[in-house]
Image 1 (cartoon, helix red, strand yellow):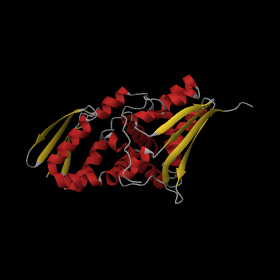
Image 2: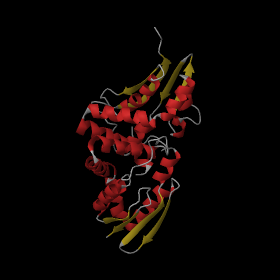
Image 3: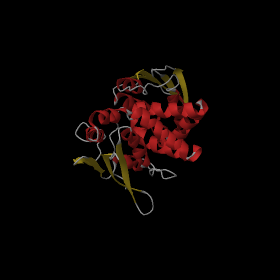
Image 4: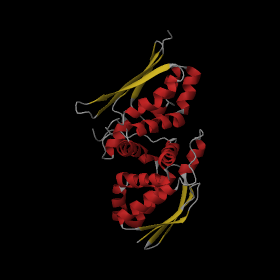
Length: 152
Length: 147
């Protein structure tokens, strides 16, 4: 399959797994993708801590620029913050006549499920906050942050 | 909501397909993986099947030329009135899976059965027969669409 079909296929895969095998199976799929695919983020965070998130997502060579996503990413003190406007991944799904999957988990949940465990390995809390419309559909905007977990 | 800017595909995603396929096979077996590919053909390639039907063998040739050459693969064709043979010399999946390999990317022996299932289903939607003439685990596939 061409990678031009990856995002709509991703969306439909989540729907298929959740509907046929259940939420636990979909969580397991997310965990597998996180473990196997997110090695670049792992390298960045291992090397740079919270600032590794900026290296991974930000800048002209970062993942979001290469995917041509409209975003801002910055450091605020020791905290990494980012915002996606009019998410192109969601647009890609909608431009193919689909709606981002909403079931026991949503299409948007995959970002948090993929990237948070990678950061957690290094004592970093990372969370995505996708915006939803009143009817539960994705609003296309999302913010996320990463910060070092306070040691008690 | 519609009509927004499209996402630019990145070539690491060829390895993403490997993860999805391996996950299905490891958790549920090869038969379930084949069912998944059929589902993807129905959900993602129905429109392509209509285009194949409308544009015929010439459209199918251009489609494969586009998807293979835009990711720096290489393909040759043999076209006649009632048949198109697609001969993949270098498959982009294999090329980029090797390039970005981080231990997970390279497809298994049956990775390219995805082409067989998905394009066989798509051909069916368009009223063509589809036959694999050469299977190769590195993607040097040869297949035929015929009327």
